[in-house]
Image (tube, rainbow, N blue to C red):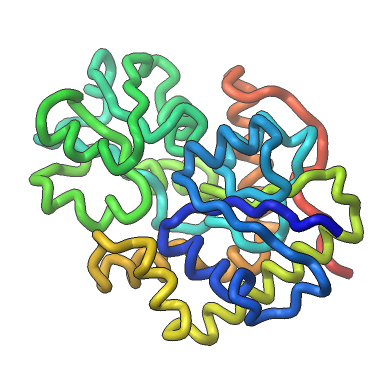
Length: 280
């Protein structure tokens, strides 16, 4: 079988959970993977172009490719208290975001979708790589920014204030965990291989959680500008039990997110199953 292309980000949660898979620490049943590390929005666009067999994608982007891809049950980023934050140089009420220029980390990120779900009238959006947003806010090039990843642990060092936690807003509205990103795989790979891939990624997540010290070199090698404490906090927040399997609650969260997006015309409607079927 030809090697499978596997895309994920250099963020600590992804390198942590994929370390065992790409370093032969878990059985891959004869499958071979060629990994490609890119930022989240690049991965979204690669998946939307159909360029990868397996790819970490934002839930927002997945809504646009779900006819061709399906989500594996393992490896995703979902949870509570882990949502994007809106920050500014001076705190103000969220209702005052209207008519302000807001930096957003990529058109197809879940952060972008959440902002539009929160207030569809917010239209002055400036799309920037996630690591350029805090400097843009600090320098006054934009009036507010939506930050993701490790930025939630470091925005205070830029002298920024929190305007709104979009994750908290989501949890109050839905009562569900927030689906941020998942591992999408081509539906054309077929049910048997897709089920196997879910189990391989699940084993990789479990191994990493059971042997965290072993992953450190690989993780820190891709996060050189991040302190060890921030890196550890990042992993603890985004790699959790939902990364092993979304379960019924996680599936409901994804379905609710897409239903809200479809209702507002932000996402294309689809009835195609979201996840690889649970193992019986």
